[in-house]
Length: 188
Image (cartoon, rainbow, N blue to C red):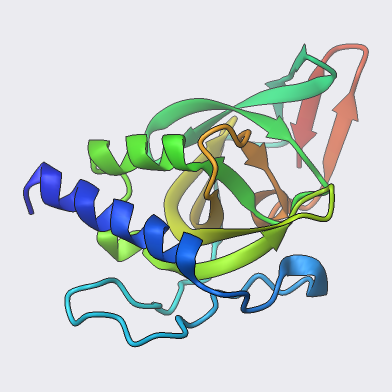
């Protein structure tokens, strides 16, 4: 599919998510994709079944990842589908979350495709505001020497939303510990 066509499909998905009415929110703790209220055109993306996330350990023992404190939050290096990014470590976020800007970048690079778009949902942020978004499958999420495969992520319909490393990734580890003196997070 030509690059412009992929971008157009991606843009249409986000436009639809902005125009769709409320279909529930994340307050219930359920972040399953919502089915669209309208019948989508035959060539549009529809809700797909997801594969259960899996964790692969490359090295032996725990892995330590350096954290960087910036503006009162801790950032950790995460590689999404081969693309290095800095995420806020957010144990209160239910899913990995990214803005439309990062999602569009990954889409243009071909690291997120139409097959990775799972569906639409609405999410409640820390302020209680409900925002529409899309749920995508990240084929690979690498943190230190750990690789998670098939992890769901929320794409917030806001270009300024921060990258959040939430529970859809963090809950897959047996134990996580933070050492604020050394600025290190350890994944067991």
